[in-house]
Amino acid sequence: MEDELTPQNATLKFPEGFLWGAATSHFQVEGHPTEMSTRLSDWSKWTAIAGNISDSTTADSACEFFSRYQSDIELLGGLNLGALRISLNWAVLCPTSGEDGKRSLDMKEVEYYRNLLSSLKKRNITTFVTLFHFCLPEALADDEGWLSEKTAIEFGRFAELIARELGEYIDYWITINEPLPYVYQGYVDGSWPPGQKQHYLNAFKAVRNMLKGHALAYHAIHKVIPDAKVSFTNHWRPFVPRNKWNPLDCLVTHMRNRVFNHLFPAAIKHGAMQFPFPLNFEPSIKALCEPIEGLKDTMDYSGVNYYTRDMSQHSFEAPFDFFGRSWRNLEAEISCMGWESYPDGLFEILTKELKPYLKRSDGKDCPIMITENGYATLFPAHLVEGDWSLTDEFRIKYLISHLMAMHKAIQKGANVKGYLYWSLLDNFEWAEGLKARFGLVRVAFPTQERTLRKSAYVYAKIAQSNTLDPFI
Ligand code: FCB
Image (cartoon, rainbow, N blue to C red; front, side):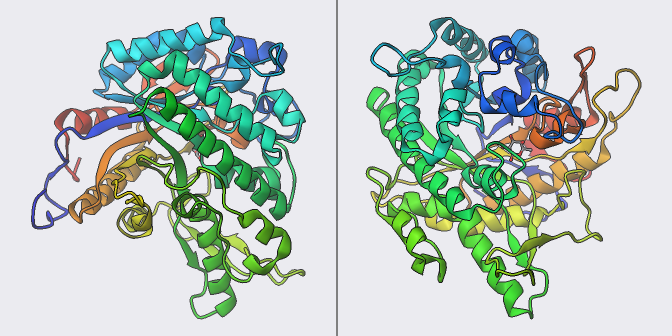
């Protein structure tokens, strides 16, 4: 580590051994034939219902990663990237209950992931594997999903089975991806399964079961692989009041920050959920704050997903909503997701907000991995030929400004060990469908042709040299 801060106009050097990679998730890329032919998960069912996906596309084929993974791994290597984040298709891997009523693994499907993961390991690629990336097996989804403790128990069991079968290929485990956005979209906004609206209590009940599931999975993996590196990913978003002189804007900003950013990591730090005043006096919420067995300190590293910040304002609608609503600053530089590019937020998260969670109570330090960060452009799914979207200056600008912020944080002492760009390929972006394109690599969905964008070349150069020239 250099003593002085590097001036931000010089070539920036990253620490030796820094890990550069890309992130994906199974549903968004796979187009898994077993899943899609019988709609085995809540998400494959959800996409089949008209009106749920804004551009009326589905993930039935997505990037056909299921059959194309070998050449996509070649692409990854060609970009000098040494890490890939994938997720496992729980619905496909554990489709039915065994004779004892417990789910067991479908070994044919396990073989698929064994081949995929061993192909990565053969090429010396560090693997990040997520066990729950938003998709539930349909039987669990139909039986209350994360509102039921049964899902947590099944999840712990799934983690143990995977640790036994595939553990040798997994370098970094991610139990659950972004629990708060998941429950927000599913129980408050209603734009993701199970499609409930304004049901904050259910959202918090689901978080409690996700914490239980995380704790069970953490210990199950460690029982099989004592030195496994296990964590979850937190979606971090700085919240700022629309009007800092308005006490109600400040109140909702505070509530959003404590719940959206801190609920999950703070529960892991303390072993129980903690809600901000006055929510903590509400009896049904208080009941959720009982300690969760085995939860405390179940984090070996810190997985950070970062995209944007949120301007928050109160709402005059009755009854008073402690979480207010977002306000979109139309003067800011925003992506097609409506997300403002705000690299300073990444610096703030890495140097300030994360601090309470970087040392466990047993003294163990948790290094930081940036497990997602990226930029989307909007191009309809039917496009095939032409030079559409290849000279993606906005993505390059976003990438460089965020890497500069990360570098500045590292110089300030943040122990960041790696960065995974979201995403390697254009893919299926949940309720937005195929049109919101996050890829370093463009995918022409009708032909599945892959074409490197200019950002891919820029990122490849950074990864190869482990340095960043801010004037690229
Ligand atoms: C994150 C999700 C990921 C992807 C990006 C754009 O919230 O984890 O699957 O959709 O957003």
